[in-house]
Image (cartoon, rainbow, N blue to C red; front, top):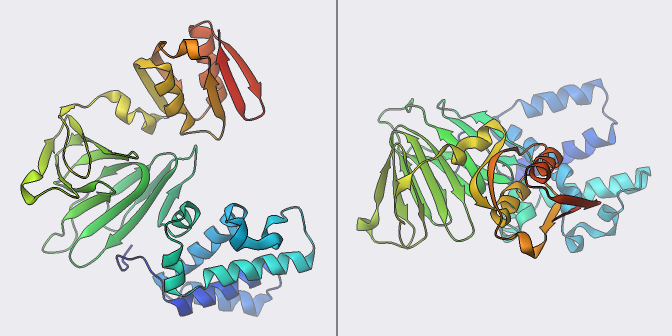
Amino acid sequence: MSHSPDNRIDPGILNEAAHWLLRVQEGRMNAEQQARFARWHSQSSEHQRAWRRAERLLDKIGSMPAGLAGPTLRRADSHSGASRRALLRSAAALLALAPAGWLAWQARPWFERLNADYVAGIGEQLEATLDDGTRITLNTDTVLDVAYTAGQRLLTLKQGEIYISTAPDTQQPPRPFRVRTDHGSMQALGTRFIVRQHEDHTLLAVYEGAVRITPADAGPGAAVTLQAGQQASFTRQHVGPLSGTSEASSAWRNGLLMADAMSLPQWVAELSRYSQDTIEFAPGLRQLKLSGAFPVHDIDLALQMLAQTYQLNLRRNGRRVYIGR
């Protein structure tokens, strides 16, 4: 994926994508128009990126801010031709906003997802191979941008968690491979590692090779290099103590949440990353310690395993689950 670091797409191409989005979704394309669309789509990687953005926009219409989407976009149960055309024209207008308009909305979570290169929704995991052969796996609720330029290979983790297995660079001289989060940057030195961004810190776990951490607001001498088998959390100011990696931190790649004397509140917080359900528990269970392996892609099964193992009671009301004695 070779494009500019700011991830902007030519507004003219965005306008063309908006036109084709309307045509395709209205289902009124004859054979000649379909051929024209195919030629437009294959014209360049920039056209393909614009079309991916258009498709994501349609998927995300339901989550747009009400003030922006307007009453038409909120009428999901309306199937009239007029409503559908109005909805799509609204979506096309948003898609074709000038770059300044795009940037003005970037702080909004829905826009960040729409405009990202890779997105894994809640409960999803996404695997991909980048242009240089680097393999990545996005965990649940993760947003990632990729920018390969002449000077570096940069991944920007906007939220969530990612597993990375780097490949040797195909260009000479080799470009550095970096991962950036809100709290700083990491440079990989031929390695396999996991990065998870929390609200107030980033966690790095290294499984092969080495990774150098540079906190965002620290001086040049504050960089710390982690070797295979080490992990650490870091803020914008400093890197915390180093500790050993554990199987638990990478178990999500096998669809599991590994608990070893984990408190129930922490277990609920971890499991909730993979579900739209709201999970609550009785205050008296706050000190309960859990151990075991729980499936993250079958929340009901994980809850049943919890209840049976620790003699607990589950009550479900729609998307809300209550754990009690």
